[in-house]
Image (cartoon, rainbow, N blue to C red; front, side):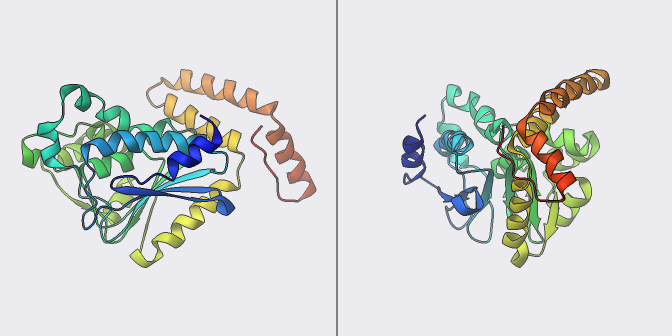
Length: 267
């Protein structure tokens, strides 16, 4: 995908969201904008996947942010769309929602108000979740005679364990942003008016590090999630050895000894 094609694609008039690129801060934002609840339509999920992939390939973007306009992040999916979608389309839902996880770059979800269903599942697929005090997380599919279908219960169980996942999934329970922070779902929980400030701070923090080391750490952690400890340690050692020969590592060591700020190039 050529750079001008990426820019042209990201400038498209998307249904239910828009894309913003801040080259000065090396930040690419996907902004949900289907008021008042930012419902995520069925076809929108595949397009969101393509946008995540395009931002991951964009040379001006170091950090990807998924956020929303208005009072709520997302109340979930278009319920009617589930009955109308073909089995083939439904079978791709989890792959589309997993796009943030597959991105090499760090991805931040910024949540406020309702963060339900597929909105929560997209957020769980991100690397970091910043919750506002108003945030309410839920997987309410039991109310429809259904279960989460895009990785929600699976990812949640990895984070909070079987008992709490059953509490949220089997009882369709909502939890607050503060409780999500306590349970390890959210990285931070801040007052609503500080949400953008907290996002900017995290973006700037992540930009300080080597892009190569960031990519390596993300892939290593994701790949080792189910690996036995001995295998995980072995893989960590291999990745560490590869990074030792990188220009970024040399720059980091030299900057440390010179007591100056490192200028990482990602190679």
